[in-house]
Image (cartoon, rainbow, N blue to C red; front, side, top):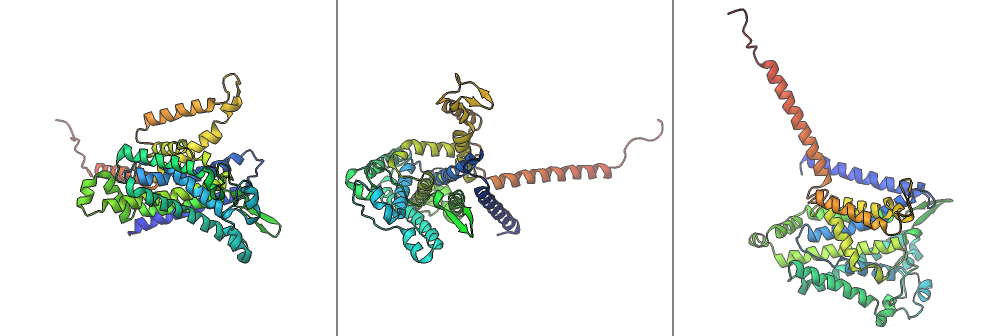
Length: 404
């Protein structure tokens, strides 16, 4: 690693740490009754969708595998996390129509002898198990499905997501999944608080943002590793990649499982943010929304996926909300701005972005590289101007002196 690359990485780490610090401060400053409370909602949902979009981009953008089963793997992660974190005292209330099979809670078990640290570890373990279980299902599904290509792979994975949604609502699995009833009372973001001598610190926004940031950081490291270069080679040309000695089946399976692992973690964070886990929330429309975020940001750009997810959630959850309530930007027009008009305007905005940004907002570029590229161009122009000025000064004066 060169000195410039080391400095670049240090700057990225410093910026990430500063961002997390700002989120933690906002968590303490902004109250639920504040007019800026929607900012916290955008950060919470945006971070979850950003992780889901980046994990899909790893599969679709960097490996070239067109999958539409992300909602199914997020569903697995959400249900796994919820089942493993419901307190024992609330099991009978949640499973009021069934006799629950799982009778323990990981955070509750660990907190009994480790206190608040046990709760943190328990949530972390539950989230990790959620991702691992999603990866296990991805491995089992990938054995037959990854033999397919293009649209056939998309249809097969989409079918898997719909099957998983139906299975989770199956009555015979009620003692585990609670059937068509929702799961609740598990560890959610509103419970992430710390009491320090009368002062209560809230981590309701920091926790999902932190999990998403760490997960996206791991995906960045993977993409920049030798495995990431192998994924890109498969995306560009499978025949050439195989001729270079890349095991196609192995690397496709690896990319599929890793992508679904982080999709499972995103599903667990989604359950935290929504405070419930229900199969009806993880419809195929969720996969299409995540795919739209990837396309808007730029296929093959991790930064683009994050920007696309944040813009999508900000516009749909915050900026355009007034269009449904009759007032927007100070204009009161209930005859025009009515329920559902927000979706019309949002669709028009998406079409405009797609028309004028064919490769997405970022294309296949990353934000740090783009910033460095702009700085390099400015430096080159400045050096060129300085060199031209020096040549002008050094050139002899060829103007003839005297008359003819």
